[in-house]
Length: 355
Ligand code: SAH
Image 1: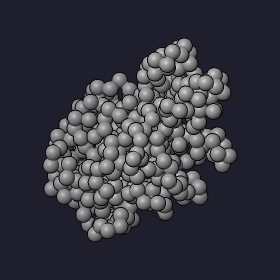
Image 2: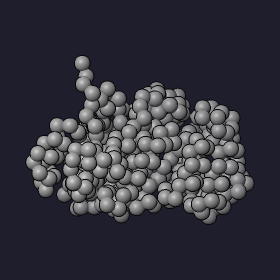
Image 3: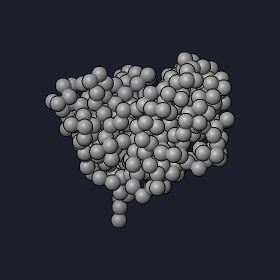
């Protein structure tokens, strides 16, 4: 029979770690040392913590773990500049993470859930259904995996600059753990990644958007919009029945007014589904009428990435450019996303837990 898992130290806040060490009768500075090892040095093993007494290291090793993900496979694409890790949870459920290294930045795309309950028809993760909410530690561990990859000589000690919550799952469906992960990554005495380095993408859960608007940390927000009208959007994304476009855009408008932060809209282009010139026109009108100032909005056009077993097609290049033209006519800022990782099944919407 499976034994109870040991507590994962990456699941603990700084305070919880201090409480644990206190309960063990350790002086307060020990918790600080361990916190630094975990979140600044990114120690993967207790024997790296050489400034701790041996007995304490042994106890930590016997009773706790650093991380809980089992690493299954790593794939490299784009001449080694994109890497996808497939991890497994204890029960074998998949978790995928993608590191993308560019000349001027390094971005990790992180999962917030294993599988996803949102069932968008064009997305590979949706086909898995919902498996698990990831814990704080399971989210943080993916970021540390990426940061450790960057220590390899090929990357010349480059730092991780961006964390995007655009992997498997819906972050706002796991808001508490997602936000707790950001808190620990942001901790100046730990990983210390600045607030503007995070982008969270949502399928359009209005309560999550309203909650983020109250957050003092300026985390970037991206909205998966994908259609200019409710009929088209509902056919693509069941969530639109719960939060139709008008409610969604109202929440986004309130968010931009309250925070004065930029939002981006993601728009996956599917051949002859949502990529007609009339739809570009309609989207332009919709966004211009939304009350969101053009200065704080941006549309990311994403030519759909193939998902096996769907009857859908990727928009042809000409249609993509025509769609962009159509939006620009409404003075809506808009770019076509440059894709990474298509060759290794690591691009947007391709994460399905297969190696
Ligand atoms: N659940 C969140 C986070 C996932 S982000 C959300 O929906 O925003 C992943 C992004 O890739 C989303 O915008 C998603 O709609 C998009 N996407 C999904 N499948 C895709 C595919 N096959 N090709 C391109 N983009 C896809």
